[in-house]
Structure formats: C-alpha cells, structure tokens
Figure 1 (cartoon, helix red, strand yellow):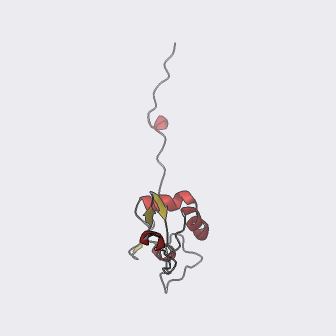
Figure 2: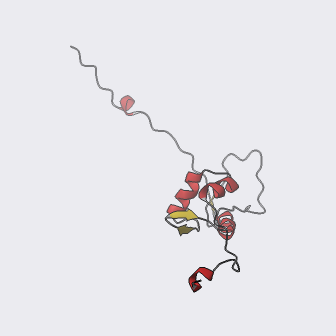
Figure 3: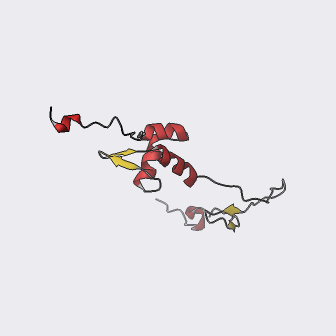
Length: 115
C-alpha cells in the first residue's frame, strides 16, 4: 500500500462549512442578501471552489456586525413628533422633514395650442 493512501483526516476535526441558504435561514433573511453582503465584502466568508461558505465563527461575527444597541438613557415620549436618527457612529442626527415639489406641468402654464 502506498503511503499516500494511508493519509487520512480522521484525527483532525474539520470545521463545518455552512451554505448561504443555511446562514439565511438562521438569520431570517434571503439567500440573495447573504450572497450580496459577501460579494460586497460586508460580512466574513470563505470561498471554497468559487462558492461562498461560512463557519460558525463567521455567523457569530455577522450577528455582531449587524447588532444595534440601545442609545441608553433616552426614553421616547408620546408627544415627540420628530425623533433623532442615529448613525452607526452613535451620534444623534436630527430628523429632516421632506417636502414634495410641485409637478412641472403645473409650474409652466403654457397656453393650449389650437388646431
């Protein structure tokens, strides 16, 4: 018997590699979202044979990346109309009220052309 055929990995514990569908199911999102986040390099992954694969450690890190913590010490009152929005840096940014513009056809009052 050749020495190469005796080599086995039974003594080595290999990490389980999860497919994007399994990660999506665990996170409660779509498989497309998981693949897109990996493609954009927003989440950790392993690329085996051209396919995205994830370890259990990757899943823990993904959960930590998208975790949002409460601001702390602030309570929302019922009469507060415009709450402050929070950026990823943790700084509060005042909400901006958007207003729609008038349609262009109402701005230019062109006389109707008769035939």
